[in-house]
Structure formats: C-alpha cells, structure tokens
Amino acid sequence: MIPLVAVVRLRNQDSRTFRLWIPLFLVWLLLLPLGILLSPFIFIACLVCRVNPFREVAVIWQILNALADTNVEVEHRTAGFSFHIV
Amino acid sequence: MNEHRQQILQMLSEGKISADEAERLIAAMEEPAAAGGSDSGAAPAGKARPKYLRVQVDSEDDGGSEGPTKVNVRVPMQLLRAGVKLAGLMPAQALHRANEAMQEHGVPFDLSQIEPENLEELVEHLNDLTVDVDQKDANSKVKVRVFCE
Image (cartoon, rainbow over all chains, first blue to last red; front, side, top):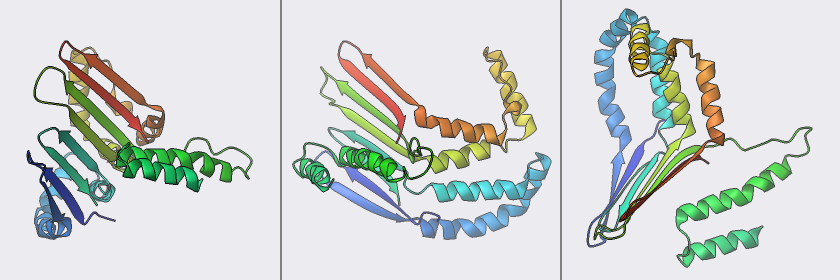
C-alpha cells in the first residue's frame, strides 16, 4: 500500500525533540490532479523515448508502494534528525 | 526462547543496547527457529530473504568539540527492486550516452546488455553483501557499514 504518513523527528541542542507527522495522503491528493494534467505530456515523452508509458507508470506506482518503512537517522551530539515513512 | 527475548528487552530498558540493536538481536534469534521450523521439507530453506539494505556511518572527532555523528539509513529491498526496474526502462539514447561516458572513464561496460532479470538477480545477491570501511586519521575515525538484513 502507498505510504500515508511520514514522521520527521528533530532534536535540538537543548535535547528537545520535535516530532512532525506529515500526512502523505494529502500530498498524493495534491499531486494527483497535477499528474492527470501532465499525463498527456508524459505519454508523448515516453513515446518519443520509445518507453512503454504504462510500464513506466506501473514502476513508479511500485516505487511509491515500496517507500514504506524507509528510515533515515542522523544523530549528532548537538542535534538529531530522523525521517521515517510509515 | 522467551527468556532470551526477555533478556534482550531488559538490556534495552537498561539502555545497554539501542532499540535498533534489540530489533536485530531478536531477528537473529528468530531466524534459526524459523529455519528449524521449516525443515520438514526436503531441502533447507537457506538464508532468509533480506528485507532492508542498511547503511551505517559512525564518525568520531577525537580532538574536536563536534562529537560523534551517527548516520543510519534503512532502505526497503522492495524499493531497490522497484528502482532497478525503473533503471531497466531507461531510453536507448540515455543508455548509449551512459555507455560512452563509462568508456571514457575506462569502464568498458554495455548497459544495454543488462536485462531486467539480471537486475533482479543483482538485488537478490545483495543478501551476501557486506561492506565495511574503517578510516582512522590523527583526530578522526570514520566507520561505514553497508549490509542487508
């Protein structure tokens, strides 16, 4: 399933931790009309490059689905950052 | 089995190990049990399929006031598989340019020869990959680990 939420955690010098939940489903909802608007251009570009546009869309969909559970953490004495896609 | 798990959780609560290490220990503990449980078949199941590619960087500045920096990146193998599929859809012109650029840099490699099945195989074999890089300077120490789990 396509990831719906991302969590960003920030730790500052005073060891205060801020956790920010990003609702990815809103991002997808916002990107959907843009994708629909751009789809004819993407389709033409795929035809010019001799790439199957449907396969391209399928792979992009697979990438979006596979994003879940991606985790990036950077910890330092003075600050920390982590990004987790749920 | 539960005793071991309890011990790991206790070590975690006491702060002796991190949550990440505890997760790996529990996974390692469960792995032989899973293999043992599935030995009713003819052939052994072999290694469990890795779920993540992990990149860990530990950097320490001995003399400076910066302190150690730890980077931990966990990428699902599924994402790598999807990524290589996208690479397989590269247009012929782009492949040609990439081949030329690689040959210019002394890498005689033809990317157009790579089939999607080869890429799948490549990702499968990442299971056996472990890269350890240790670098020590006068006042800094960097350790990089790349492995699958």
